[in-house]
Length: 271
Image 1 (cartoon, rainbow, N blue to C red):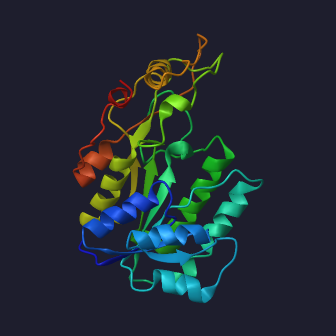
Image 2: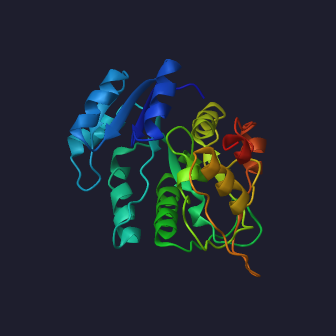
């Protein structure tokens, strides 16, 4: 699929470099932010800036944001607020009336929708999220699928790392951590962008696709090395007889999209 215009709802840590990547390919980008200060940043990168807040709807602003784009990317993660399952769904629902029947949508989801199975998890698993944020994301997935049908593709990203998001800081100095032998599921930001571009290029609509590195080191191995790389105190894990984890499969992303991960081994990032 060849596109000329894209709208990115949420130009933060992932959305901004994604927009820049589109522009480098000659694609015009409309990008949203919730702060006036960020408008200057977007404009400096040749992104058409739009001040949007999902707390309320300005019909003119929303319609201008989506108008003319072949693809709309929803990249707004749920915030840690009370009743997030209700709040997040209401937020995303507010943009739906401004998406027409000719436009395709990519929803940046999360592998937090998967419950711990102590085994590999695939896209066709009947998911039972264990945390409110995962429950909120699943509700949005289901809403988008019910409204947009085969015009929405959901990409469930694993833990996001890369650039200023250094995993060595996540658990440094912590003690008595559980699941030492549990598996790590992460994805580098460059691979997030690569997957999104592949979905559009391959015209892969109506899909759910996991985004995750090929390999899954243990939590103890990964976070110990990551902390040491930054010169921080490594976390201390306790050894248990039972564990609770999941291994996110990326097989579909490689088979369906023909995608090759740039950062297939998380340990390479922290050595």
